[in-house]
Amino acid sequence: MRGRLIVFEGVEGCGKTTQLEKLRQWFVESGWFAKLLAQGQLQQLITTREPGGTLLGLAIRQLLMGQTGQEPIQDRAELLLFAADRAQHVEGFLRPHLEQGAMILCDRYTDSTVAYQGYGRGLNLSLIAQLNQLATQGLESDLTLWLDLDVEIGLARSRRRGTLDRIEQSDLAFHQRVQQGFATLAHTYPNRIVRIDASAAEQKVADQIQIVLQQRLADWYRV
Image (cartoon, rainbow, N blue to C red; front, side, top):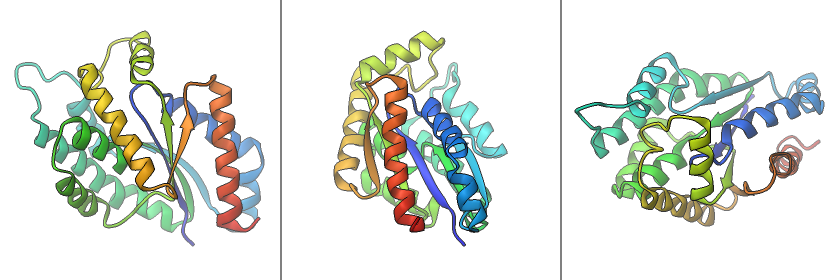
């Protein structure tokens, strides 16, 4: 039995974390999880995130998101820290749970590295592809939900939440390049990445996601 990996992606303030939790609640309350559990097609429902999905990852997340004082993190160092977090996450958490039949909802995965470090920072996309391959050993998402939102709206939401983290503090042009990265990825991988209009009201965004997931569940489990 193999579980399913569903990833939430998007620019800062797009609502990934909120929508991930709303989907988790819906999956349980709608009866889908109980049905698939009873049929033996799923065993667990788990949420996680990158960076920070493991104990080692939490330490890496603090380095990546926190303030670095007098020594800024260089772009290639940032890329390698994300890769280290992912390698630990995949080998120590994602793959074992998927092999046990879990459905995993994950806040960010490989597409974020392409969008942020590739398009945003301007690092070599071929190098990033190689690092992602090394870190994941070929583990891809079964479905990626791209919450598409104007970057200025997203950053305004982030500011309302409180202090911005290190990456959120990057200039507007950086975030616009990141958004272009996600748009390019969605165009390149239409079967894996589904665009969700994240500018709608919170429940309407959730409704879009639920429709997409119900279609995929029907395809995956023939129910």
